[in-house]
Image 1: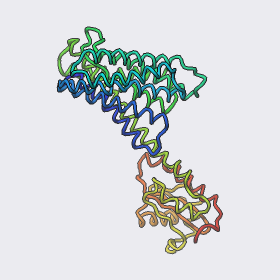
Image 2: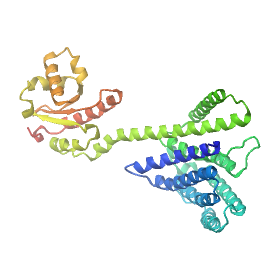
Image 3: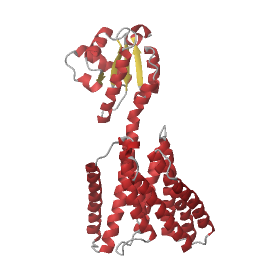
Length: 397
């Protein structure tokens, strides 16, 4: 497969992964809705363009012109969302009229028409440069610090994306026989997912960029050594192919991390929607708590085979959440610990906490005893604290 296709489809895969992530979210912001228009256009363009370079069918070349013609419109809407204000009227008219003209030109032109190709080339470069200038010249006082950080990241990504996108239009040095538009798409996606989580600094951006380039260079060097071809014609494409793949993996890794963080944040969503009018309503709300998919709530009637006072005393005096592994090692109150161990093992649970002392109410959960589960102990402790703040008479003994 030609390096052009690998780079382009790596970009298409990264853009598609970001689209899938946004689609799977429970809620979607206004900016994300506008970003999706841009991502749809980029994904369609990169997938079809890669197939055209692989197949060579002139009709596919014409097909790539349609999403390319709509990209400036989608990009303008996205930039307006970033800045939270409308762009200049002249720019909006240029994009609105230009998009219609370019789409019509792409549809009615003959396959492989140089006129349609060159017209679209000029239109894309002009509008992207205008949008870059709009981002660069914005009034920073209109946006919060976190918003400015995101816009800064997108401005840099846009500048680099414009330069690499020019290679798709054969505007590149003679030694670079490679089209790098896919890397531009990856940079836009990476900037949006990386800067959206925390405010970056110049130092972190420089270090992150250097680290990405170093990883790509290391992989490319290994490929060159294994292939045994040290020529520039092989080394340069090898580096950019490796850079595209490293960026793709970085984007996917960022999206997986964000998805995992949102799974953790599901506790916040539960906390905001839980019914905390009484202990009974809180217990009913536990059915919707994701980390408690396998749980039991035991009351006095369920504990008649145990020394209830000993169990409650042990749980009240110890840490907010007790684990099966911890109880097996406990020596301070071995008899109560043995009963708690038996209680957990007989119900197939691994963690428990005390929701109410009088009447006694225990909350048992089955969680894996691995590092990520330790993060959930704090969530269970919060559940216990909320339960303890509720009036005791609301408990149904």
